[in-house]
Length: 92
Image (cartoon, rainbow, N blue to C red; front, top):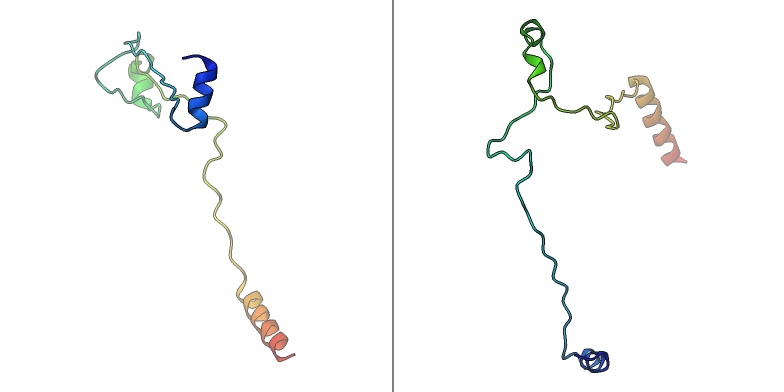
């Protein structure tokens, strides 16, 4: 279709252009039908037997933030003081 005709049909909303994407998927060198879970911890038994050399380990993520620390609480006397302050502010 020439560009001029295509532009005219698009202007009149008689033509809808779509982009089609396709992918080729092939089996790679690490393809396996079984799901193998990598080890996350190194135990003393693995070190003693030497089995850790053949096991796949999960890589470390040094950029993760981890769990946030547990936050503290207000002292009970500070809570009472803030309540009294609020009462006096409401009284004027």
